Image (cartoon, rainbow, N blue to C red; front, top):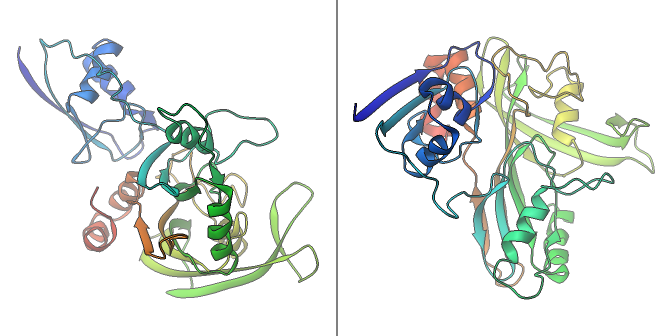
Length: 323
């Protein structure tokens, strides 16, 4: 049969599925061959080369397979990158990673494995006879993706944390919230405290409450959802989620804050529609101004395409970073 080109377009109502399982279902090839196809540039997702068989896709996804039906593709040794993060920057003082949704930044009291910090430590200690310490500077929620900085010593970590405490770093998020917002831009300001269920809530100012300030600007409005860019002035736990949910516009996919209103038929993903896109700060040793951008995940682009194809054309050129 030789060379084969096969296109797979998932209907908008399709449930989420791993891309390798979709490829196997459509081709009937063995799992080992499917994994090899990802290592030999045979799989394309939404126009981009896809090298992660574990990537989850849903309605609106466009998969193209280009392969030789007579070739038994084999997985390349050590070709598979971490599913937990993509390395964005590294020097001898710090690391910047793009965290994937679905992973804890650090373990809880339950001592979970496969956390981001575990994966970063494994990366930092590759080829070393003694352990390279990794200091945690800040965190992202399990179901949020985006940029995180880790330090390679407690001293460096303390210097970066000091910048965060003084509200100096640039932190910009992309989010899709339920419903429509009343203003094209705005600021949400409240004091947050933890309730008995460990949720964050806005409360009157007091000893146990911490000031939280969130700025937003609308990128695109849809019939029943809104794409926004969010800038943090402070970085409290769940801050963005709480502020938007309390004004009746929860983050899509949120199962903690306003879960019923956070459901959307075109967001079937088991993650939040929240992504830490931009992180900027001063290098703690060199003094250089660092600024990193993590491409907006494909789930966001697919959502825009399904909700409003015309709007996607206007938004994508200026908004969705080339991968």
